Image (cartoon, rainbow, N blue to C red):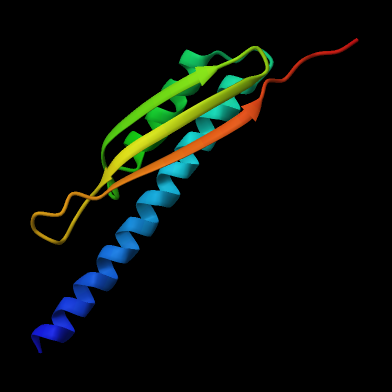
Length: 106
């Protein structure tokens, strides 16, 4: 019976990690889309990513969002701690998204 219980907790923990990875990736994508827009800014992209990561509080804890930009590319990285069912284990997930900046030609 303890083995079955441990496998059940392991399955739920795997689901939490997947959900955390998906939420972190969605936040990074949202942030990079905002920042890479024609009138977008890096600060606006970081704020958008942080807002989405904070809204995903069920799966994520302590989200940290960073970003960088070049004249052509914007990159947003979201690092989060995923809630853990296992005592003493502190899993972290990092997702990065990059996109070329929109430019108006003509």
